[in-house]
Amino acid sequence: MNARKLAPILLALLLAFGAGVFFTTAGSSLFGWTHLTRTGLAEGDTQLASNPETLEEAFVTVAERVNPTVVMIDATSEPQAQNSRNQQRQRGPNPFQGTPFEQYFDQFEGQVPGQETPREGIGSGVVVRQDGYILTNNHVVENFDTFRIRFFDGSEARATLVGRDPASDLAIIKVDKTGLPTVSLGQDNMLKVGQWVMAFGSPLSPDLSNTVTTGIVSALGRYSSEGGGDQPRLGDYIQTDAAVNPGNSGGPLINLRGELVGLNNAIYTRTGGFQGISFAIPVDVIRNVMNQLLENGTVRRAMLGVTIGPVSANLAAADNIPRGAAQVGSVNDGSAGERAGIRPGDVILSVDGRALRDYRELTQRILNKRPGDTVTLEVLRDGSRRTLSARLDERDMGGARAEAASSGKDGGTATEKPSAADQPGAFEEGLGFAYRNVAALSAQQRETFGLPASVRTGVVVTDLSATSSAFRDAGLTPGSLITSVNGQAVGNVADFERIYRALPAGQSFRVQVANYRDGQVFQTRTALTKPR
Image 1: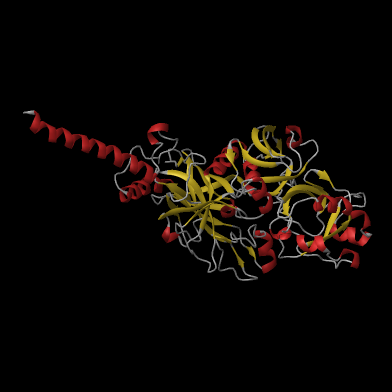
Image 2: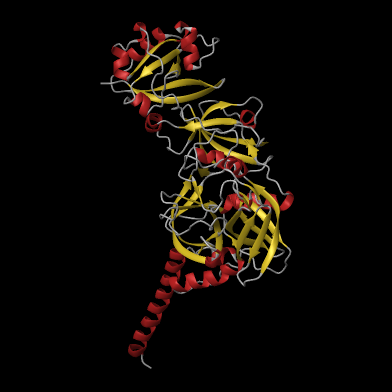
């Protein structure tokens, strides 16, 4: 064959090879398979060993692999007289009351007040160990006595409770079986918005067990509350539009590699049914809690020993601080945070090299650590970045409040009308708030603002406009105590006005603020702008 005839053949071969490389790479990127050849198979039986050629094939293959690991949980309690009061006491308060997560999946119906009847509920679970250990939600098993497990092949078995963790809403139960297929766990922090996911479970009825739905990851880092309660609760939920309904609780959320990336947990709904928004617990939380429950039936959590809040919009703009950063309000004496050198007013930017997407994420990262773990924190202080290392303490889950969120905006507008001496003047009108010497406050005013009698220096905000930048963007509230401006101490009104007068119109200036709440002081920095 001469060179002229050989050339087109060689060109076609090269084009075919290039196309193969392209489509393999594109398919890996589209379906999230890029790490398969890099990491090999994960523990478990569901991860795909090769890349399906089409999206349809991926769905089918993953469903065939994962379904045998998914179970239906039929939970019942002993018969007892029901009435509205003891029913609420048995179920406990809804931990998501007043939040987008208020509507839990498993709703219990058919209970007539005064009637002696067993309580029943349907949920889902997934096998995580071959010797019969099953992962599910805490709210699927809480307040129930017996658990009947139905497997994909139709067989049934009784399960016993191994351990549960209300803070993460996770639990482990066990059946007396061996050789069970198990789900593969995905890698931590690898999920991305837009990735395909598949939700497995038993929605609404036992007749609908092992239902599979598909969707994408709609968002990451969704939170159930502002935090700061006596019983810290894990958040950082995955949001997806994969269809889930009552009964899906505890079912796995799976990527197209056949790996568990989350556990179905809650939905956002105004009708009681699916409306395109559901939430799942992420795999990094699952892995930590599951391992501890399997080891000893309980979960120990770490504590940094600081209170935090968001960075105000004004300060973020003035100092070019990411809005997800967490500002430290106070540091507990003798805590891990104090030993690490954290100070009130510090801004924490990242944990272990990962930037915070939301200030509440700091709480979740620390809660997902164990006592004795060491974390690396990137901190912004006085305009310079530094790295601190903290060896974490153990959190008392019964009442500790470390890493509590302090939004700095729970004061609203003033609750007490200021006296004539506090009426806004030239400076107050421009800034949008009234102020006076803290030393001049009456006992009643101190009580209103929560300021201890021992606080004698500083300028206190007594009233401010709800439409002002000071309230909306700087986070000031009635009772906020200004202690310094641009690093210069403010002992009284004269100090504040002297510093303020020297500023050119239109210039932003940094303000150190102390807020006193429940006997604690929260030190924060924010920024204001002198009007032109």
